[in-house]
Length: 102
Image (cartoon, rainbow, N blue to C red; front, side):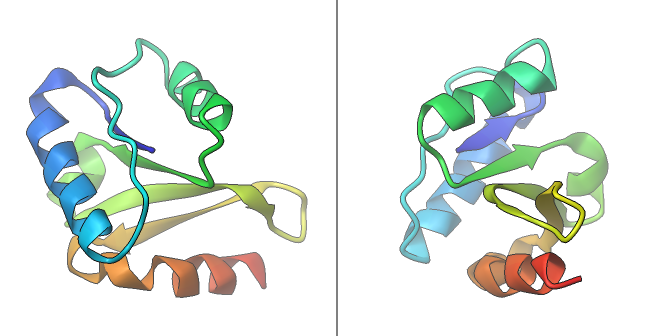
C-alpha cells in the first residue's frame, strides 16, 4: 500500500505506485491520507498488504520513501522499515532482507 502523508503529495504517491508496478509489484494506492499514521498502517494491514510505503515530505526532500514491512520483524521483534531511494525502488526486497538481518 502506498500512502501520501497529505493531499499535496498524492501526485508523488501515484508516481511511486506506477514505478513499483513497473517493477512487478502489486500496489494499492490509498485514495486519501488518513488523519493519523496508525490509521494508514491499519488500512494496509486490513488490505493484507505486505508493505506500507509512506510518502512524507521530509523523506521526499531527501529523495527517499520510508517502507515498513508489515510481515517481517527484526531481531528485537519490531517491524522492519527502510528508507529506499526513489531511483532504487526495485531493490526493496534486498533492503528489507538486509535490515531484518541486523
